[in-house]
Each structure stands twice: as C-alpha cells, then as structure tokens.
Amino acid sequence: MHFHTVFKGSPHKDIVEAIKETSPFEGDQVRVTVTAAGLCASDNHFRSQDMVLGHEGIGVVQETGLNVRHLREGDRVGWGFQHNSCQLCKLCLQGNEVYCQDRQMYGVSNLQQGAFATSAVWRESFLIPIPKGIKDEHAAPLMCAGATVISSLKYTTMTPGSTVGVLGLGGLGHLAVLFASKLGFRVIVISSSPSKRSHALELGAHQFYDLNVALSKGMEECLDALLIMTSAQHLEWRRLPTLMAPGGCILPLGIIDTDINIPLVPLVTNGLLIKGSIIAARHTMLEMLGFAVTHDIKPVVRESPLSKPGIMEAMDLLAHGAIIFRAVFMPTRG
Image (cartoon, rainbow, N blue to C red; front, side, top):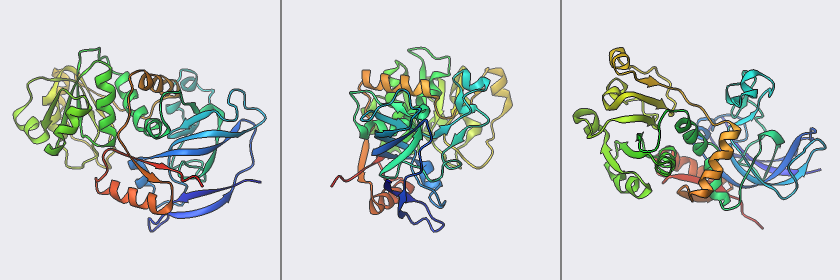
C-alpha cells in the first residue's frame, strides 16, 4: 500500500493538502515520483475546482504495471495537459491525438491525479521520456508551455529568416522567443509593457515594439506569423491585420471568453490566415525536448517549494503578473 500527498483546489481557492492512497494499478500504468512541477495560468483557472492541480510534471518512475513495455524503474519522464486518447481513431493514428474525440485532458479527466503531488499514476503511452542534458526545473515548463509554442510554430509555412511576432512576453511568450530565435526566425516582441524591452532582447528577440505604437504607427517590417500570447480582453483584434505580411498567419494561443472581431476585407485581400493551435502531440513533444537540449534552451524559472504555502504564494504572484517568467515547484527532500 502506497500513500502520497496531493495539493487540490477548492471552491474558495484555498489550496488543500491531502494524503491519499495511491490508486490500484491497471496493466499499463506507471507510478511516478514527482521531482518538479511547473505552474501554468490554466492551473489558476482550475484553482476553485475540487481536483489535484498541476499538469507540467517531471518525475522518476518508481513502479510499473504488468503490461508496461518500455519504461523501467529509475527512468525520468514528464507529462502535460493530455492524459489519454482512444489511440485507435484516424486522428490518433495520424499523430493528432490532441484532437481525438475521446481525448482526456487536464481539468476534465483524472481529477485525482496531478503534478502538484509527491507522486502520480499515468498511462505509459502518455509519459514522455526526458533526455539527459536538461534539468527537471527546466523540463517542467516545456511539458505544456513549450509544447504549445513549438506546436504553433511547427504548423506554419515559415522557413528560417521568416519574421515572427510574439505579442505578450509572459511565461508563454518568453518560450516563444527562445524557440523561434533558435529555429532561425527573425523575432519581434510586441508588448504593452515597455519595461520588458530589455528582457525581450536578452532572450533573443531582434526588435521590440510597444503595442500601442505598433498598432497606431505601424512597424518597419510586416510579420509572417503573429503568436498572440496574451489573454487580455482589451486587445484590439481588428487592427492586427495591419501588422501582417500577405499570406501571414495569426495564431491566438491565449484563451479569452469573448468573441474576437477582425474585419474580413484585409483577410481576403491579403490572404491572411487565423489558425487555432492547441497543445502538442506526443511526437512533437519528443522533438521539442531534443531541440531544447541541442540548442541549450532553458526557461527562466522561479523555484518554489512544492508545499501548500509555496503553491499559494506562487499562484497569487502569477495572478498579479509578478512572476518572471515561469514558476516551478520543487519537492523538499527530507
């Protein structure tokens, strides 16, 4: 019998620490001891839910079910937003399991499993091997934020030398700058916070524009792609086509609850594309991790203890935009 600690949300948004008995294994499941857990904005979204929080998990395999084929005790693995899929439909067989109609995602399925815990149980097929050369605290933010960024960049028609705009320089945006610059793109950061100019250039951006200036006066060059990392409700979507080169692609990655308003004429006359993008499929996550190791991509992280006070403090700071750029929880080993 195995017990572990979990950290759950609650209706009053307090973090609840609980001791739970580990669920009985199914044949292809793996028990993982958590060694790092990233904090994502969506974790704050689910903070009021009675569920174990956290979906950017890194850990070490401690025990495997009878039908586990590849993972062994001591292997380092990670997981992200998606927990499962049918693995039999056309989309799954094409490597697009993120769109499977039977997909199981964080916040909807497996509510008693999460990264904010001392251990978790996952299906082998949705655990991603973590390569040597990347530390746990740097790998954790890549399991969702990094995967989301690389997936959006991968499914454009851009080639090295293309110009990419990154609108919003927070936890997600800073990873977009790191990956896009290493992919050979010309990176322009656009932000409503002029104080972030130095951060943008240090991360690898080639230029920085104040958002209001870019929208009112334009920029020196047009964008082949624009990654929108902000969920700000006040963003003037109707003016974004003025920033784009013909054939350019606008990719909204920050989720908002309202409709967006973009005029049709510039979309048609300039052949612009608005493309949704979700988390990365597993094969893309493997490619991303390998790319991160090869190019020494390291997210900028703020480490906090994996404890109730540590989680509450970091979540409150994130809610007020006071974390540069990602928070990662690390367990205290006694």
